[in-house]
Length: 293
View 1 (cartoon, rainbow, N blue to C red):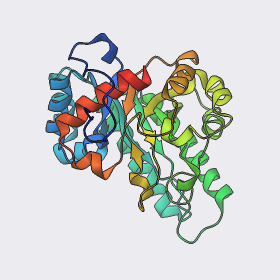
View 2: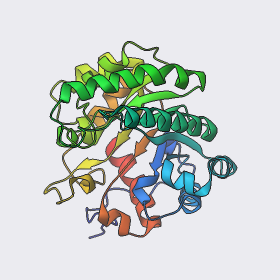
View 3: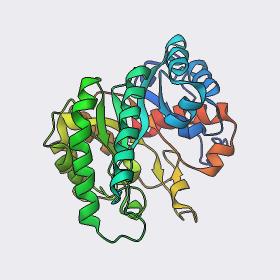
């Protein structure tokens, strides 16, 4: 039997060739090929006919923001999003102000890279804190301060609700409804939400929440929920089709809500990271067309 690499699941379809119109909305998030530097990741997308890439600030900073923008542009790719802003829950005022300034820099970087989407991982509870309501209030205060600056740069803050298991350390927003409610006081052009299948698939209210989000949806990300979870749950994301998520149902929901942007494959998984990057890109294309479309 033929098997996809690196996931070990039976191959379902031939690998789509570069130029296949089914790939027109596909974006490869840089984290899916985490061991590649930025030039190698850009080259991978270009060679495989993946038209967009989701960038992360650390490798972009290492290469240089202006150089990164030129590299992506010269390769004929678009930047679907920049990750990540956020971490806005500090109780200590100097730390909170430092986070505001760091996010202003991230907004400027997104604008330089030519993307209008800055993914916001809003942050978890400060060390020793149990004040979840207070943490959420500080996120709301920070978004209120950052939104006008983001709008002035043509960038939208995309609030990412995260699975509740990450509430303490990464994201105090856990549902699409919560993210939409926090975005609602601000113009839709300046604050939106991320729908990441890994984080929201479990929510019994997700269909209604996505419908209500409408044009607030700034990014749609896909990867699968596989069990058992690893000891480091951050690395528990699987290749589409290896787990339990109904991608077509969720993709239909965001499409019906009016989202027509890129669909970003973002996988945190040690086995995927260790695999040959060309095989990973080929598997992403197969699974995207067979599981998501």
